[in-house]
Image (cartoon, rainbow, N blue to C red):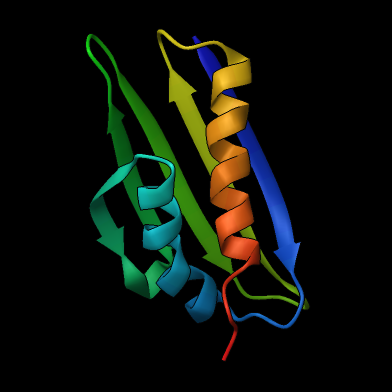
Length: 99
């Protein structure tokens, strides 16, 4: 089983802004959100593949600066593929307009 877990900080963005942007970021990477917890800035998503689902969790939290944690796990895909999906999600989040 491959798993990545990474936390990044986002100066100038609030947890609300990060949470508002996560769904678009997930969609760009082929994931569909199946559970949202807006009060806790938490979301669960899946990417459906032919014979295996790829699971992901996104969470944002306040701080100075705000931070987000992304976890992606798969029984089938190697670490390199998970990292490619994560890079796509991070890029999309970094490009979101904080206004």
